Image (cartoon, rainbow, N blue to C red; front, side, top):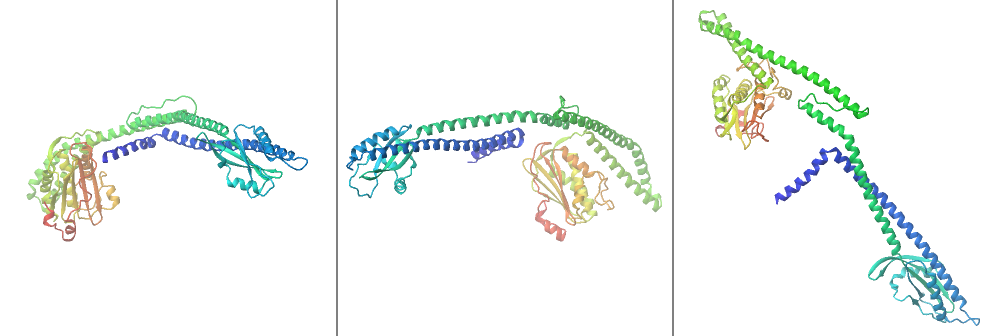
Length: 544
């Protein structure tokens, strides 16, 4: 059941992507929709107006015929009275029927009926008559009541006629006749309005066809106009994308003097200015990178000499005074720090120059983390911090640059030792199908949100005055971040003032492969958290 549902959702997603991604589609669709609504309203109004006009004209014509037929029939009845005051009502009735047929000359005349008004007592009674085959059910009680109530007026009512099994619109007109000696009778004339309906249907079909044609034409005109209007904008967008990709020579073709030509010239001027600035900045960047690289290389020779001389002096420190021996120790420490800084500067210059190539090996990251913990265990002991490892996954081999990942983990652990306030430090390792994650969690001083935002800036330190055990140049996290990006991964940070910090490295199992979610949440949840915070030691089951 899920496959058809997913296919249905994918079918809905394609039009949605087209709607969101195409200005031309949205403009044409909205224009056609609004035009269709407007044409429908106008066409409906015109159809109703024409229908009313046709019905009014035909009903006026029929009412005129009805009045003429009633006048003729009434004259025949009145003239049929003999000098002696008697009348042959049946003979007069026959003559009146002939006159009514002659008067009913409009197209669609279906017949007539002469019905005696109920409830009368007269000397004579004339037989009620009607056209052969006429369905008297169309003469409703309501219409007869109106004729009796207003005998001097002409009345009409719209009805449906049944002709050969087909329902057709019709009109029944009615008036009153006064037959001498026979009393009051009602004259009903029935008309078939199928010709009016056919005319209206033809007009409506013409309106519908014209409306559809008009909407299609509006859509085509809108498509052409909008395509012409957004064509230069699309070309500008494509040119901008090419510029963003590094093709700085791309320009928009200029022609004419209209606003599009002005846009093209302005865009090209902007592109020329941007190209000049980019080339200038690129040149400055190359000069800066070359300067850093050259200085770093050139400083290595005198630094090596200084280091050798310092080592010679350090071996003879026992012959020096206490003050000189202490000065020599400080000198050796700064020389080591200088060497680390030069190494970091050279590494950053390689990243800036895009000259970094990964040396990928099949590595067990759990074993790599254990080696890092063993390496920094003496430093952690000096700071009264205990190192713990919690492995949830990641025992399999991963393709990584071992040297760079080791550098990242050592940086995480060194920072945790320096800022962990002597509390335990836990390293988490976990993995999923796509990625492997390593997180280092401490319960030390933590950082403010504005400090977290700057933690990867070069030469930046959260607390420059703080005494560090592992040295440091302010480039460690910047290099670590570049190492993670080089693998196709990233570093995430969580920190709270007084609640500690957690740095998480997530990398794909294969360099630059795609991945979505990190195997570890940030910060990783552990049963040991509460115990670490309260007693400073983890429960046994939390440590692997």
